[in-house]
Picture 1 (cartoon, rainbow, N blue to C red):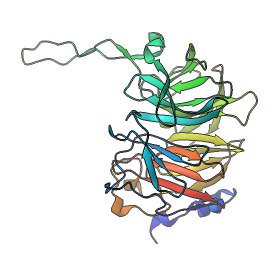
Picture 2: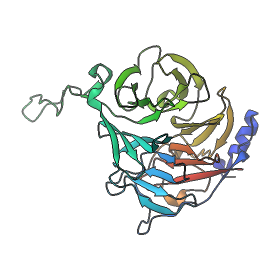
Picture 3: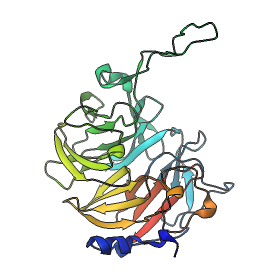
Picture 4: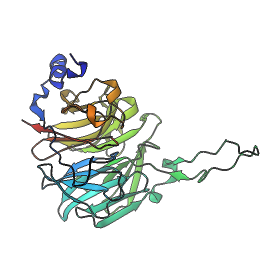
Length: 338
């Protein structure tokens, strides 16, 4: 038997938890936009609006955000959306529904309407340099034996990878590819504070994506510490509260709805955790090492219901699960709640 046929149902039964049959893979649900042989290069995120429209971020200057209907049909591109939304969320608020996105290369954080109009932009320059990484000094020599300063040597920078918005409107943004600090802003974009990083008690290593955990009062921040293979809780003031789950397959993305936290593991699985951090279900488990944790897995080896490198996860209102892959070809999964 092909070893990756070990299903999420079997794994859950072995672990003594509820079965993953609560969700069922919807094969080939997404229809490609006309003229595209493949969806395209993806290193981003996914979110679902209140109208059940599915937004997918792309590494594509002409189509930074694609929008699909609940039936998987392509509807439109979001005008003027950037092509580097590594992490974004959609939030419905009293004054409308908005996209909040952390730009990986753009050195800023954006709030947009669903049709792409800019509402607010926070430049990374408002974050104190003490909480940023710096471009290291160049130690390489040129042909003359001289050490030539590197471009931007000593300059502070961020590589923003994920964010979420609290019920009170505060923004929490993680600098996952640089300092692994979380930066907090108020609803008007005013910088408030930073916390986390690589030193004790946090000791983060690639704090990749985060979510506001509304299952608790007061709300908490739930974080994917990818290279430490764990999910952790922080208070909204930045206190380290402890590990939620560990020994995961490189957790890279997280979303919270109702009683559950949904964790996309770039090593080849999507886990559903309860409030106590226990595994409720595991979806899409792929044990073929050559297929997971990279963006080069070719479409001809894809199998319905088996993920390769989950990089973004989301629920819709009905509890269906959506997964955006890290893939140069582009792939989005759907698991319907039964």
